[in-house]
Length: 166
Image 1 (cartoon, rainbow, N blue to C red):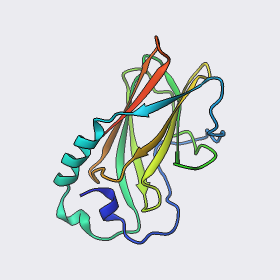
Image 2 (image 1 turned 90 degrees about the vertical axis):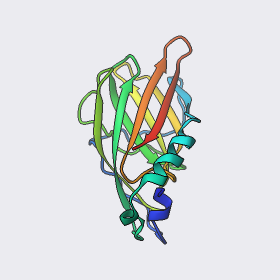
Image 3 (image 1 turned 30 degrees about the vertical axis):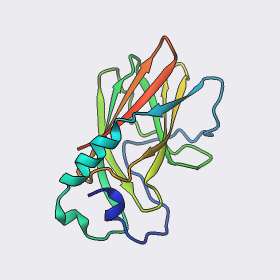
């Protein structure tokens, strides 16, 4: 069952708890920001995962907390990973409590409401280079968890965030 089916009639904006401290910058792309896209393959994975969620999770709720794992396959050490509900004019806090080396992953919790199922993310390295990912849709995500895999192609300067559902 997708997250949207688990969240009924919520009007307030959702809270997010994951790793820690502060990005807080504008989401307006800068000279060092490259727009990126999410993987189209996530739709099939979302449908499969949605079908496997237990019946117990179908109860109506005002929010759903989901474990999220971020995998860094960018080739560089990440110093920031920020998130905000889509459409916000600034980034939320840095979700990393320490740097995330290439090949490492970090896990925490994300809380969703009916109003916060689509998110924007920004990853950054120690040189201040950032890449933004817009409109990552968790509507069909499994309540069992999600993995966000980050990659970077240095020859094109393009990053990819690929979501998959547990």
